[in-house]
Length: 624
Image (tube, rainbow, N blue to C red; front, side):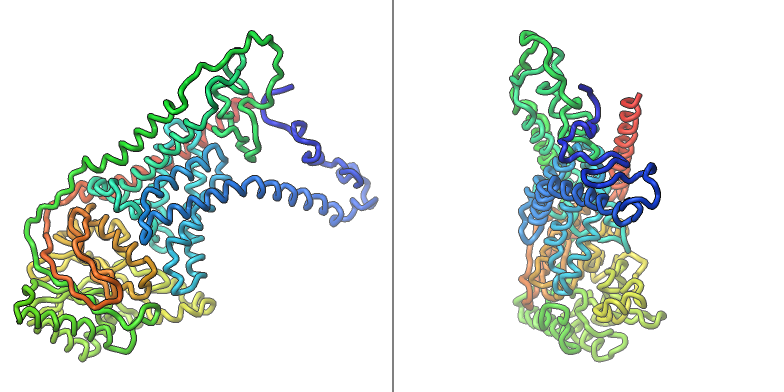
Protein backbone atom coordinates (compact mmCIF):
# COMPACT_ATOMS: atom_id res chain seq x y z
CA UNK A 1 0.00 0.00 0.00
CA UNK A 2 1.11 3.57 -0.56
CA UNK A 3 0.03 7.14 -0.11
CA UNK A 4 0.16 9.97 -2.62
CA UNK A 5 -1.27 10.45 -6.09
CA UNK A 6 -3.22 7.60 -7.57
CA UNK A 7 -1.45 5.56 -10.23
CA UNK A 8 -2.65 3.27 -12.97
CA UNK A 9 -2.43 0.38 -10.56
CA UNK A 10 -5.28 1.93 -8.61
CA UNK A 11 -7.63 1.87 -11.60
CA UNK A 12 -9.98 -0.93 -12.55
CA UNK A 13 -8.29 -3.11 -15.08
CA UNK A 14 -10.87 -2.30 -17.72
CA UNK A 15 -10.01 1.41 -17.58
CA UNK A 16 -6.24 1.07 -17.38
CA UNK A 17 -4.55 2.48 -20.50
CA UNK A 18 -1.70 0.39 -21.90
CA UNK A 19 1.82 1.36 -20.99
CA UNK A 20 3.74 3.29 -23.62
CA UNK A 21 4.97 0.89 -26.25
CA UNK A 22 3.07 -2.06 -24.75
CA UNK A 23 0.74 -4.15 -26.86
CA UNK A 24 -2.99 -4.13 -26.29
CA UNK A 25 -4.60 -7.59 -26.37
CA UNK A 26 -4.81 -8.81 -29.92
CA UNK A 27 -2.49 -6.12 -31.29
CA UNK A 28 1.25 -6.20 -31.96
CA UNK A 29 3.51 -3.99 -29.93
CA UNK A 30 4.38 -0.62 -31.42
CA UNK A 31 7.43 1.13 -30.06
CA UNK A 32 11.13 1.78 -30.58
CA UNK A 33 11.95 -1.91 -30.37
CA UNK A 34 9.69 -2.88 -33.24
CA UNK A 35 11.58 -3.69 -36.39
CA UNK A 36 10.89 -1.28 -39.20
CA UNK A 37 8.73 -2.61 -41.96
CA UNK A 38 7.32 -5.55 -39.97
CA UNK A 39 3.66 -5.99 -39.09
CA UNK A 40 0.91 -3.45 -38.97
CA UNK A 41 2.96 -1.21 -36.72
CA UNK A 42 4.89 -0.12 -39.79
CA UNK A 43 1.85 1.79 -41.00
CA UNK A 44 0.91 4.99 -39.19
CA UNK A 45 -2.81 4.33 -39.71
CA UNK A 46 -2.78 1.09 -37.72
CA UNK A 47 -0.92 2.70 -34.83
CA UNK A 48 -3.26 5.69 -34.81
CA UNK A 49 -6.42 3.59 -34.41
CA UNK A 50 -5.85 2.52 -30.79
CA UNK A 51 -4.65 6.02 -29.93
CA UNK A 52 -7.84 7.55 -31.32
CA UNK A 53 -9.92 4.91 -29.56
CA UNK A 54 -8.22 5.71 -26.26
CA UNK A 55 -8.79 9.42 -26.69
CA UNK A 56 -12.46 8.88 -27.53
CA UNK A 57 -12.86 6.62 -24.50
CA UNK A 58 -11.27 9.20 -22.21
CA UNK A 59 -13.36 11.99 -23.74
CA UNK A 60 -16.52 9.96 -23.21
CA UNK A 61 -15.66 9.39 -19.57
CA UNK A 62 -14.92 13.10 -19.16
CA UNK A 63 -18.24 14.11 -20.71
CA UNK A 64 -20.19 11.68 -18.56
CA UNK A 65 -18.42 12.83 -15.43
CA UNK A 66 -18.85 16.56 -16.12
CA UNK A 67 -22.41 16.45 -17.48
CA UNK A 68 -24.21 16.75 -14.11
CA UNK A 69 -22.00 19.62 -12.98
CA UNK A 70 -22.42 21.39 -16.33
CA UNK A 71 -26.20 20.98 -16.18
CA UNK A 72 -26.27 22.48 -12.68
CA UNK A 73 -24.11 25.38 -13.88
CA UNK A 74 -26.45 26.04 -16.80
CA UNK A 75 -29.47 25.93 -14.50
CA UNK A 76 -27.76 28.41 -12.17
CA UNK A 77 -27.05 30.73 -15.10
CA UNK A 78 -30.72 30.65 -16.04
CA UNK A 79 -31.55 31.51 -12.44
CA UNK A 80 -29.29 34.56 -12.60
CA UNK A 81 -31.05 35.74 -15.78
CA UNK A 82 -34.38 35.61 -13.92
CA UNK A 83 -33.01 38.07 -11.35
CA UNK A 84 -33.09 40.77 -14.04
CA UNK A 85 -36.10 42.51 -15.58
CA UNK A 86 -38.66 41.71 -16.76
CA UNK A 87 -38.68 38.90 -14.15
CA UNK A 88 -37.12 40.82 -11.22
CA UNK A 89 -36.52 37.79 -8.98
CA UNK A 90 -33.45 39.42 -7.41
CA UNK A 91 -32.81 36.81 -4.64
CA UNK A 92 -31.91 34.37 -7.42
CA UNK A 93 -28.77 36.44 -8.01
CA UNK A 94 -27.49 35.39 -4.58
CA UNK A 95 -28.33 31.74 -5.15
CA UNK A 96 -26.69 31.78 -8.60
CA UNK A 97 -23.46 33.23 -7.20
CA UNK A 98 -23.49 30.65 -4.40
CA UNK A 99 -24.06 27.83 -6.88
CA UNK A 100 -21.20 28.90 -9.15
CA UNK A 101 -18.91 29.19 -6.13
CA UNK A 102 -19.71 25.62 -5.05
CA UNK A 103 -19.56 24.16 -8.55
CA UNK A 104 -16.06 25.54 -9.10
CA UNK A 105 -14.77 24.83 -5.61
CA UNK A 106 -11.79 22.50 -5.51
CA UNK A 107 -11.62 22.21 -9.30
CA UNK A 108 -8.71 22.89 -11.60
CA UNK A 109 -8.59 26.16 -13.49
CA UNK A 110 -9.53 24.37 -16.71
CA UNK A 111 -12.52 22.67 -15.11
CA UNK A 112 -13.58 25.95 -13.51
CA UNK A 113 -13.35 27.71 -16.86
CA UNK A 114 -15.71 25.20 -18.46
CA UNK A 115 -18.14 25.46 -15.55
CA UNK A 116 -18.08 29.25 -15.82
CA UNK A 117 -18.81 29.05 -19.54
CA UNK A 118 -21.66 26.58 -18.97
CA UNK A 119 -23.03 29.08 -16.43
CA UNK A 120 -22.54 32.17 -18.58
CA UNK A 121 -23.92 31.05 -21.94
CA UNK A 122 -27.53 30.41 -20.87
CA UNK A 123 -27.42 33.46 -18.60
CA UNK A 124 -26.56 35.84 -21.41
CA UNK A 125 -28.74 34.07 -23.95
CA UNK A 126 -31.84 34.66 -21.81
CA UNK A 127 -30.74 38.14 -20.68
CA UNK A 128 -30.00 39.36 -24.22
CA UNK A 129 -32.87 37.60 -25.94
CA UNK A 130 -34.19 41.04 -26.97
CA UNK A 131 -31.57 40.96 -29.72
CA UNK A 132 -33.70 38.37 -31.51
CA UNK A 133 -35.24 41.24 -33.51
CA UNK A 134 -31.90 41.31 -35.32
CA UNK A 135 -31.53 37.53 -35.34
CA UNK A 136 -30.97 34.69 -32.91
CA UNK A 137 -27.50 34.28 -34.34
CA UNK A 138 -26.77 37.76 -32.93
CA UNK A 139 -28.12 36.64 -29.55
CA UNK A 140 -25.96 33.52 -29.58
CA UNK A 141 -22.82 35.24 -30.88
CA UNK A 142 -22.88 38.02 -28.29
CA UNK A 143 -23.75 35.49 -25.56
CA UNK A 144 -20.70 33.40 -26.43
CA UNK A 145 -18.43 36.45 -26.30
CA UNK A 146 -19.81 37.56 -22.95
CA UNK A 147 -19.73 34.01 -21.55
CA UNK A 148 -15.98 33.88 -22.17
CA UNK A 149 -15.57 36.46 -19.41
CA UNK A 150 -17.50 34.23 -17.03
CA UNK A 151 -15.30 31.36 -18.16
CA UNK A 152 -12.29 33.33 -16.93
CA UNK A 153 -14.21 34.05 -13.73
CA UNK A 154 -14.86 30.33 -13.25
CA UNK A 155 -11.16 29.58 -13.60
CA UNK A 156 -10.36 32.24 -11.00
CA UNK A 157 -12.99 30.94 -8.60
CA UNK A 158 -11.56 27.43 -8.89
CA UNK A 159 -8.03 28.62 -8.16
CA UNK A 160 -8.91 30.79 -5.16
CA UNK A 161 -11.33 28.28 -3.63
CA UNK A 162 -8.34 26.65 -1.91
CA UNK A 163 -7.36 29.88 -0.14
CA UNK A 164 -8.51 31.02 3.30
CA UNK A 165 -11.28 33.65 3.13
CA UNK A 166 -12.20 32.40 -0.32
CA UNK A 167 -15.64 34.15 -0.40
CA UNK A 168 -13.82 37.50 -0.22
CA UNK A 169 -11.59 36.66 -3.17
CA UNK A 170 -14.62 35.37 -5.08
CA UNK A 171 -16.37 38.73 -4.67
CA UNK A 172 -13.26 40.57 -5.88
CA UNK A 173 -13.12 38.30 -8.93
CA UNK A 174 -16.73 39.16 -9.83
CA UNK A 175 -15.69 42.82 -9.82
CA UNK A 176 -12.64 42.01 -11.97
CA UNK A 177 -14.82 40.14 -14.48
CA UNK A 178 -17.19 43.09 -14.79
CA UNK A 179 -14.25 45.50 -15.02
CA UNK A 180 -12.96 43.62 -18.06
CA UNK A 181 -16.39 43.22 -19.66
CA UNK A 182 -17.04 46.94 -19.22
CA UNK A 183 -14.05 47.70 -21.46
CA UNK A 184 -13.43 44.79 -23.83
CA UNK A 185 -13.84 44.27 -26.70
CA UNK A 186 -14.59 47.45 -28.68
CA UNK A 187 -15.31 49.53 -25.61
CA UNK A 188 -17.08 46.75 -23.71
CA UNK A 189 -20.67 45.76 -23.02
CA UNK A 190 -21.53 45.89 -19.30
CA UNK A 191 -25.09 44.58 -19.66
CA UNK A 192 -25.83 41.94 -17.03
CA UNK A 193 -23.76 43.31 -14.15
CA UNK A 194 -24.90 41.92 -10.82
CA UNK A 195 -25.68 45.45 -9.64
CA UNK A 196 -28.27 45.90 -12.39
CA UNK A 197 -30.17 42.82 -11.25
CA UNK A 198 -30.76 43.84 -7.62
CA UNK A 199 -32.08 47.42 -7.83
CA UNK A 200 -35.22 46.32 -5.99
CA UNK A 201 -33.19 44.95 -3.07
CA UNK A 202 -31.58 46.27 0.14
CA UNK A 203 -28.25 46.40 -1.72
CA UNK A 204 -29.23 49.47 -3.78
CA UNK A 205 -28.24 52.20 -1.23
CA UNK A 206 -24.66 50.90 -1.32
CA UNK A 207 -24.38 52.56 -4.74
CA UNK A 208 -24.14 55.94 -2.99
CA UNK A 209 -20.85 54.79 -1.40
CA UNK A 210 -19.18 52.85 -4.19
CA UNK A 211 -21.44 52.89 -7.21
CA UNK A 212 -22.40 49.81 -9.19
CA UNK A 213 -19.04 48.28 -8.27
CA UNK A 214 -19.79 48.15 -4.55
CA UNK A 215 -23.27 46.74 -5.19
CA UNK A 216 -21.80 43.96 -7.32
CA UNK A 217 -19.13 43.26 -4.69
CA UNK A 218 -21.73 43.04 -1.90
CA UNK A 219 -24.03 40.74 -3.88
CA UNK A 220 -21.13 38.47 -4.87
CA UNK A 221 -19.80 38.40 -1.29
CA UNK A 222 -23.23 37.53 0.09
CA UNK A 223 -23.68 34.78 -2.48
CA UNK A 224 -20.24 33.28 -1.84
CA UNK A 225 -20.85 33.38 1.91
CA UNK A 226 -24.12 31.52 1.41
CA UNK A 227 -22.15 28.94 -0.55
CA UNK A 228 -19.68 28.70 2.32
CA UNK A 229 -22.55 28.18 4.77
CA UNK A 230 -24.00 25.42 2.59
CA UNK A 231 -20.59 23.78 2.36
CA UNK A 232 -20.16 23.85 6.12
CA UNK A 233 -23.59 22.34 6.65
CA UNK A 234 -22.87 19.56 4.14
CA UNK A 235 -19.63 18.35 5.71
CA UNK A 236 -19.54 14.80 7.16
CA UNK A 237 -21.88 14.32 10.07
CA UNK A 238 -20.46 13.94 13.59
CA UNK A 239 -19.93 10.53 15.13
CA UNK A 240 -18.08 8.90 12.20
CA UNK A 241 -15.15 6.69 13.17
CA UNK A 242 -11.60 7.84 12.66
CA UNK A 243 -8.07 6.68 13.30
CA UNK A 244 -6.06 7.36 16.47
CA UNK A 245 -4.83 10.74 15.23
CA UNK A 246 -8.24 11.94 14.11
CA UNK A 247 -7.20 11.99 10.46
CA UNK A 248 -7.57 9.65 7.54
CA UNK A 249 -10.77 8.35 6.05
CA UNK A 250 -13.78 9.29 8.10
CA UNK A 251 -11.85 11.89 10.08
CA UNK A 252 -12.81 15.51 10.42
CA UNK A 253 -10.69 16.48 7.43
CA UNK A 254 -11.94 13.77 5.13
CA UNK A 255 -14.21 16.16 3.34
CA UNK A 256 -11.24 17.91 1.78
CA UNK A 257 -8.43 16.21 -0.05
CA UNK A 258 -5.01 17.71 -0.63
CA UNK A 259 -5.91 18.75 -4.16
CA UNK A 260 -9.33 20.18 -3.52
CA UNK A 261 -11.86 20.75 -0.77
CA UNK A 262 -14.35 18.46 -2.42
CA UNK A 263 -11.97 15.51 -2.22
CA UNK A 264 -11.33 15.30 -5.94
CA UNK A 265 -8.08 14.98 -7.74
CA UNK A 266 -7.02 18.40 -8.98
CA UNK A 267 -5.85 16.92 -12.27
CA UNK A 268 -8.96 15.28 -13.62
CA UNK A 269 -11.63 15.46 -10.94
CA UNK A 270 -11.55 11.71 -10.25
CA UNK A 271 -12.65 10.68 -6.76
CA UNK A 272 -9.93 10.42 -4.14
CA UNK A 273 -9.86 10.07 -0.41
CA UNK A 274 -8.27 12.81 1.66
CA UNK A 275 -4.79 11.31 1.78
CA UNK A 276 -4.54 9.04 -1.20
CA UNK A 277 -5.31 5.32 -0.96
CA UNK A 278 -6.74 4.35 2.40
CA UNK A 279 -4.41 2.41 4.67
CA UNK A 280 -5.74 -0.87 6.08
CA UNK A 281 -6.92 -0.90 9.64
CA UNK A 282 -4.17 -2.63 11.61
CA UNK A 283 -4.85 -1.52 15.14
CA UNK A 284 -7.28 -2.94 17.64
CA UNK A 285 -10.81 -1.60 17.77
CA UNK A 286 -10.05 0.06 21.08
CA UNK A 287 -7.63 2.44 19.37
CA UNK A 288 -10.36 3.95 17.20
CA UNK A 289 -12.41 6.76 18.60
CA UNK A 290 -15.42 8.75 17.51
CA UNK A 291 -15.17 12.34 16.32
CA UNK A 292 -16.57 14.63 19.05
CA UNK A 293 -20.11 15.60 18.13
CA UNK A 294 -20.47 19.12 16.78
CA UNK A 295 -23.81 20.50 15.63
CA UNK A 296 -23.64 20.79 11.86
CA UNK A 297 -25.66 23.99 11.70
CA UNK A 298 -23.31 25.73 14.14
CA UNK A 299 -20.56 25.70 11.53
CA UNK A 300 -22.89 27.20 8.94
CA UNK A 301 -24.12 30.05 11.15
CA UNK A 302 -21.12 32.47 10.94
CA UNK A 303 -21.00 32.73 7.11
CA UNK A 304 -24.79 32.86 6.89
CA UNK A 305 -24.98 35.66 9.46
CA UNK A 306 -22.22 37.55 7.69
CA UNK A 307 -24.07 37.21 4.37
CA UNK A 308 -27.18 38.64 5.99
CA UNK A 309 -25.18 41.50 7.50
CA UNK A 310 -23.76 42.43 4.10
CA UNK A 311 -27.25 42.35 2.58
CA UNK A 312 -28.69 44.61 5.28
CA UNK A 313 -25.73 47.02 5.32
CA UNK A 314 -27.46 49.13 2.69
CA UNK A 315 -30.08 50.20 5.22
CA UNK A 316 -27.34 51.99 7.18
CA UNK A 317 -26.24 54.05 4.15
CA UNK A 318 -27.79 57.53 3.98
CA UNK A 319 -29.17 58.43 0.57
CA UNK A 320 -29.49 62.23 0.42
CA UNK A 321 -32.49 63.48 -1.54
CA UNK A 322 -32.95 67.09 -0.38
CA UNK A 323 -33.32 69.36 -3.40
CA UNK A 324 -31.38 72.61 -3.70
CA UNK A 325 -33.85 73.76 -6.32
CA UNK A 326 -36.56 72.37 -8.61
CA UNK A 327 -37.54 72.73 -12.25
CA UNK A 328 -40.88 71.96 -13.82
CA UNK A 329 -40.35 69.57 -16.70
CA UNK A 330 -42.42 67.86 -19.37
CA UNK A 331 -41.24 64.61 -20.97
CA UNK A 332 -42.77 63.95 -24.39
CA UNK A 333 -43.09 60.38 -25.67
CA UNK A 334 -44.33 60.74 -29.23
CA UNK A 335 -44.38 57.03 -30.12
CA UNK A 336 -43.39 55.33 -33.40
CA UNK A 337 -45.25 53.64 -36.22
CA UNK A 338 -44.25 50.09 -35.28
CA UNK A 339 -41.70 48.18 -33.16
CA UNK A 340 -38.68 46.44 -34.62
CA UNK A 341 -35.94 47.29 -37.06
CA UNK A 342 -38.24 49.40 -39.25
CA UNK A 343 -39.66 51.63 -36.53
CA UNK A 344 -39.00 54.87 -38.41
CA UNK A 345 -41.89 54.64 -40.86
CA UNK A 346 -42.22 57.40 -43.44
CA UNK A 347 -39.98 60.50 -43.19
CA UNK A 348 -41.02 63.15 -40.64
CA UNK A 349 -43.44 60.71 -38.96
CA UNK A 350 -41.63 60.46 -35.61
CA UNK A 351 -40.80 64.18 -35.57
CA UNK A 352 -44.44 65.07 -36.24
CA UNK A 353 -45.55 62.75 -33.45
CA UNK A 354 -43.41 64.66 -30.94
CA UNK A 355 -44.38 68.05 -32.33
CA UNK A 356 -48.10 67.25 -32.11
CA UNK A 357 -47.77 65.95 -28.54
CA UNK A 358 -45.93 69.16 -27.60
CA UNK A 359 -48.61 71.30 -29.27
CA UNK A 360 -51.24 69.45 -27.22
CA UNK A 361 -49.26 70.28 -24.09
CA UNK A 362 -49.11 73.95 -25.13
CA UNK A 363 -52.89 74.03 -25.57
CA UNK A 364 -53.35 72.51 -22.10
CA UNK A 365 -51.09 75.20 -20.67
CA UNK A 366 -53.03 77.98 -22.40
CA UNK A 367 -56.30 76.53 -21.14
CA UNK A 368 -54.97 76.35 -17.58
CA UNK A 369 -55.22 72.57 -17.41
CA UNK A 370 -51.47 72.20 -17.04
CA UNK A 371 -48.77 74.34 -15.44
CA UNK A 372 -46.27 75.74 -17.93
CA UNK A 373 -43.04 73.74 -17.67
CA UNK A 374 -39.58 75.29 -17.45
CA UNK A 375 -38.31 72.94 -20.14
CA UNK A 376 -39.47 70.10 -22.38
CA UNK A 377 -37.48 66.92 -23.01
CA UNK A 378 -37.72 64.88 -26.19
CA UNK A 379 -36.08 61.46 -26.58
CA UNK A 380 -33.24 60.18 -28.72
CA UNK A 381 -34.11 60.18 -32.45
CA UNK A 382 -37.21 62.32 -31.84
CA UNK A 383 -36.33 63.87 -35.18
CA UNK A 384 -35.72 61.33 -37.90
CA UNK A 385 -34.27 64.06 -40.15
CA UNK A 386 -31.27 66.34 -39.67
CA UNK A 387 -32.83 69.73 -38.79
CA UNK A 388 -29.77 71.57 -40.15
CA UNK A 389 -29.98 69.85 -43.51
CA UNK A 390 -33.77 69.66 -43.91
CA UNK A 391 -35.42 73.08 -43.27
CA UNK A 392 -38.86 71.52 -42.85
CA UNK A 393 -37.58 69.57 -39.81
CA UNK A 394 -36.10 72.68 -38.23
CA UNK A 395 -39.31 74.61 -38.90
CA UNK A 396 -41.41 72.08 -37.02
CA UNK A 397 -39.05 72.24 -34.04
CA UNK A 398 -39.36 76.03 -34.05
CA UNK A 399 -43.14 75.68 -34.12
CA UNK A 400 -43.18 73.35 -31.10
CA UNK A 401 -40.75 75.46 -29.04
CA UNK A 402 -42.62 78.73 -29.72
CA UNK A 403 -45.98 77.16 -28.94
CA UNK A 404 -44.92 75.87 -25.51
CA UNK A 405 -42.73 78.92 -24.89
CA UNK A 406 -39.77 77.11 -23.28
CA UNK A 407 -36.58 75.38 -24.49
CA UNK A 408 -36.83 71.80 -25.77
CA UNK A 409 -34.02 69.26 -25.45
CA UNK A 410 -34.31 67.58 -28.87
CA UNK A 411 -32.79 64.26 -29.91
CA UNK A 412 -31.68 64.17 -33.55
CA UNK A 413 -29.23 62.54 -35.94
CA UNK A 414 -27.01 65.22 -37.47
CA UNK A 415 -24.54 64.94 -40.33
CA UNK A 416 -20.96 65.41 -39.18
CA UNK A 417 -19.85 68.92 -40.21
CA UNK A 418 -16.43 67.91 -41.53
CA UNK A 419 -16.27 64.13 -41.94
CA UNK A 420 -18.18 63.01 -45.00
CA UNK A 421 -20.36 59.94 -44.48
CA UNK A 422 -20.46 60.16 -40.67
CA UNK A 423 -23.43 61.08 -38.50
CA UNK A 424 -23.64 62.32 -34.90
CA UNK A 425 -26.25 61.27 -32.35
CA UNK A 426 -27.04 64.53 -30.57
CA UNK A 427 -29.12 66.15 -27.89
CA UNK A 428 -29.75 69.79 -28.94
CA UNK A 429 -31.15 72.61 -26.83
CA UNK A 430 -33.81 74.26 -29.07
CA UNK A 431 -34.76 77.72 -27.80
CA UNK A 432 -38.15 79.25 -28.68
CA UNK A 433 -36.48 82.53 -29.69
CA UNK A 434 -32.96 81.69 -30.92
CA UNK A 435 -33.47 78.15 -32.21
CA UNK A 436 -30.69 75.53 -31.90
CA UNK A 437 -28.01 76.16 -29.31
CA UNK A 438 -25.74 73.97 -27.16
CA UNK A 439 -25.58 70.27 -27.97
CA UNK A 440 -24.17 66.97 -26.73
CA UNK A 441 -22.88 64.22 -29.02
CA UNK A 442 -23.05 60.62 -27.85
CA UNK A 443 -19.59 59.51 -26.76
CA UNK A 444 -20.04 55.74 -26.95
CA UNK A 445 -21.73 54.56 -30.15
CA UNK A 446 -22.84 50.93 -30.10
CA UNK A 447 -20.67 48.56 -32.19
CA UNK A 448 -22.62 46.90 -35.02
CA UNK A 449 -25.67 49.01 -34.13
CA UNK A 450 -24.41 52.56 -34.65
CA UNK A 451 -21.14 51.82 -36.38
CA UNK A 452 -19.59 48.78 -38.03
CA UNK A 453 -16.02 47.85 -37.05
CA UNK A 454 -14.01 46.53 -39.99
CA UNK A 455 -16.89 47.52 -42.25
CA UNK A 456 -15.17 46.75 -45.58
CA UNK A 457 -14.40 43.19 -44.54
CA UNK A 458 -17.39 42.22 -42.41
CA UNK A 459 -20.18 43.73 -44.50
CA UNK A 460 -19.26 41.41 -47.37
CA UNK A 461 -19.76 38.39 -45.12
CA UNK A 462 -22.63 39.62 -42.93
CA UNK A 463 -24.99 41.36 -45.31
CA UNK A 464 -27.27 42.59 -42.50
CA UNK A 465 -24.54 45.04 -41.51
CA UNK A 466 -25.42 46.97 -44.65
CA UNK A 467 -28.54 48.10 -42.78
CA UNK A 468 -26.20 50.41 -40.84
CA UNK A 469 -25.45 52.67 -43.82
CA UNK A 470 -23.37 55.27 -41.96
CA UNK A 471 -21.12 55.16 -38.94
CA UNK A 472 -21.85 57.31 -35.90
CA UNK A 473 -18.98 59.58 -34.92
CA UNK A 474 -18.30 59.74 -31.16
CA UNK A 475 -18.33 62.96 -29.18
CA UNK A 476 -15.51 63.94 -26.85
CA UNK A 477 -17.17 66.11 -24.19
CA UNK A 478 -19.62 65.50 -21.37
CA UNK A 479 -23.28 66.32 -21.85
CA UNK A 480 -23.76 69.16 -19.35
CA UNK A 481 -26.31 71.51 -20.97
CA UNK A 482 -28.04 74.60 -19.64
CA UNK A 483 -31.66 73.93 -20.56
CA UNK A 484 -33.78 76.84 -19.38
CA UNK A 485 -33.20 77.22 -15.61
CA UNK A 486 -31.79 73.70 -15.23
CA UNK A 487 -28.24 72.51 -15.79
CA UNK A 488 -28.85 68.96 -17.01
CA UNK A 489 -26.48 66.12 -17.76
CA UNK A 490 -27.42 64.45 -21.03
CA UNK A 491 -26.62 60.74 -21.41
CA UNK A 492 -27.82 58.97 -24.54
CA UNK A 493 -29.27 55.44 -24.46
CA UNK A 494 -26.76 52.63 -23.71
CA UNK A 495 -24.33 55.14 -22.17
CA UNK A 496 -26.26 54.79 -18.92
CA UNK A 497 -24.63 51.36 -18.50
CA UNK A 498 -21.09 52.82 -18.42
CA UNK A 499 -19.88 54.10 -15.05
CA UNK A 500 -17.38 56.65 -16.28
CA UNK A 501 -19.67 58.48 -18.70
CA UNK A 502 -22.38 59.15 -16.12
CA UNK A 503 -19.88 59.93 -13.34
CA UNK A 504 -17.96 62.42 -15.49
CA UNK A 505 -21.22 64.15 -16.41
CA UNK A 506 -22.21 64.61 -12.76
CA UNK A 507 -18.74 65.76 -11.73
CA UNK A 508 -18.85 68.31 -14.57
CA UNK A 509 -21.78 70.04 -12.88
CA UNK A 510 -25.01 68.28 -13.87
CA UNK A 511 -27.76 68.92 -11.30
CA UNK A 512 -30.01 66.20 -12.74
CA UNK A 513 -29.59 63.52 -15.40
CA UNK A 514 -31.50 62.95 -18.63
CA UNK A 515 -31.31 59.62 -20.43
CA UNK A 516 -32.46 60.20 -24.00
CA UNK A 517 -33.17 56.80 -25.49
CA UNK A 518 -34.86 55.09 -28.40
CA UNK A 519 -35.98 51.58 -27.49
CA UNK A 520 -38.44 51.17 -30.35
CA UNK A 521 -36.30 48.49 -31.98
CA UNK A 522 -36.50 46.35 -28.83
CA UNK A 523 -40.02 47.19 -27.68
CA UNK A 524 -41.89 44.58 -25.65
CA UNK A 525 -38.78 42.42 -25.31
CA UNK A 526 -37.73 43.32 -21.75
CA UNK A 527 -34.87 45.55 -22.89
CA UNK A 528 -36.58 48.85 -21.89
CA UNK A 529 -37.15 47.47 -18.38
CA UNK A 530 -33.50 46.39 -18.16
CA UNK A 531 -32.39 49.87 -19.12
CA UNK A 532 -34.78 51.56 -16.69
CA UNK A 533 -33.28 49.78 -13.66
CA UNK A 534 -29.91 51.24 -14.66
CA UNK A 535 -31.48 54.69 -14.28
CA UNK A 536 -32.59 53.70 -10.77
CA UNK A 537 -29.07 52.67 -9.82
CA UNK A 538 -27.53 55.83 -11.31
CA UNK A 539 -29.99 58.00 -9.37
CA UNK A 540 -28.78 56.57 -6.04
CA UNK A 541 -25.14 56.38 -7.12
CA UNK A 542 -24.98 60.10 -7.94
CA UNK A 543 -27.75 61.52 -5.76
CA UNK A 544 -29.47 62.92 -8.84
CA UNK A 545 -32.97 62.72 -10.19
CA UNK A 546 -32.97 60.86 -13.50
CA UNK A 547 -35.35 61.49 -16.38
CA UNK A 548 -35.64 58.76 -18.99
CA UNK A 549 -37.13 60.05 -22.24
CA UNK A 550 -37.96 57.32 -24.77
CA UNK A 551 -39.56 57.52 -28.21
CA UNK A 552 -41.90 54.58 -27.58
CA UNK A 553 -41.37 53.85 -23.86
CA UNK A 554 -40.50 53.41 -21.15
CA UNK A 555 -40.22 57.12 -20.22
CA UNK A 556 -39.91 57.77 -16.49
CA UNK A 557 -38.93 60.16 -13.72
CA UNK A 558 -36.75 58.60 -11.00
CA UNK A 559 -36.14 60.37 -7.71
CA UNK A 560 -32.62 60.65 -6.22
CA UNK A 561 -33.40 57.74 -3.88
CA UNK A 562 -34.05 55.43 -6.85
CA UNK A 563 -37.84 55.38 -6.55
CA UNK A 564 -39.71 55.62 -9.85
CA UNK A 565 -42.04 58.61 -9.47
CA UNK A 566 -43.81 58.32 -12.85
CA UNK A 567 -43.54 56.11 -15.91
CA UNK A 568 -45.29 55.52 -19.21
CA UNK A 569 -46.44 52.39 -20.97
CA UNK A 570 -44.75 51.18 -24.12
CA UNK A 571 -46.00 52.20 -27.55
CA UNK A 572 -48.33 54.92 -26.36
CA UNK A 573 -48.18 58.67 -26.95
CA UNK A 574 -47.87 60.33 -23.57
CA UNK A 575 -46.56 63.37 -21.72
CA UNK A 576 -45.16 63.28 -18.18
CA UNK A 577 -45.01 66.49 -16.12
CA UNK A 578 -43.17 66.70 -12.82
CA UNK A 579 -41.21 68.95 -10.48
CA UNK A 580 -37.65 67.74 -10.95
CA UNK A 581 -35.36 68.07 -7.90
CA UNK A 582 -31.99 69.66 -8.70
CA UNK A 583 -29.03 68.89 -6.46
CA UNK A 584 -25.46 70.16 -6.20
CA UNK A 585 -23.88 67.87 -3.57
CA UNK A 586 -21.94 64.88 -4.81
CA UNK A 587 -21.94 61.41 -3.29
CA UNK A 588 -19.03 59.43 -1.90
CA UNK A 589 -19.20 57.33 -5.07
CA UNK A 590 -18.67 60.44 -7.20
CA UNK A 591 -15.68 61.52 -5.15
CA UNK A 592 -14.12 58.03 -5.08
CA UNK A 593 -14.43 57.62 -8.82
CA UNK A 594 -13.04 54.41 -10.34
CA UNK A 595 -10.60 53.73 -7.44
CA UNK A 596 -12.76 51.07 -5.70
CA UNK A 597 -13.23 49.15 -8.95
CA UNK A 598 -9.52 49.11 -9.73
CA UNK A 599 -8.60 48.16 -6.15
CA UNK A 600 -11.06 45.27 -5.89
CA UNK A 601 -10.20 43.98 -9.37
CA UNK A 602 -6.48 44.02 -8.58
CA UNK A 603 -7.09 42.18 -5.30
CA UNK A 604 -9.02 39.53 -7.22
CA UNK A 605 -6.18 39.04 -9.71
CA UNK A 606 -3.59 38.94 -6.94
CA UNK A 607 -5.58 36.25 -5.16
CA UNK A 608 -5.33 34.11 -8.30
CA UNK A 609 -1.58 34.69 -8.44
CA UNK A 610 -1.27 33.70 -4.78
CA UNK A 611 -3.27 30.52 -5.36
CA UNK A 612 -1.04 29.56 -8.30
CA UNK A 613 2.14 30.22 -6.29
CA UNK A 614 0.91 28.22 -3.30
CA UNK A 615 -0.13 25.36 -5.56
CA UNK A 616 3.33 25.17 -7.13
CA UNK A 617 4.98 25.28 -3.72
CA UNK A 618 2.75 22.45 -2.51
CA UNK A 619 3.65 20.28 -5.50
CA UNK A 620 7.35 20.97 -4.93
CA UNK A 621 7.06 20.01 -1.26
CA UNK A 622 5.30 16.74 -2.11
CA UNK A 623 8.01 15.82 -4.62
CA UNK A 624 10.63 16.53 -1.95
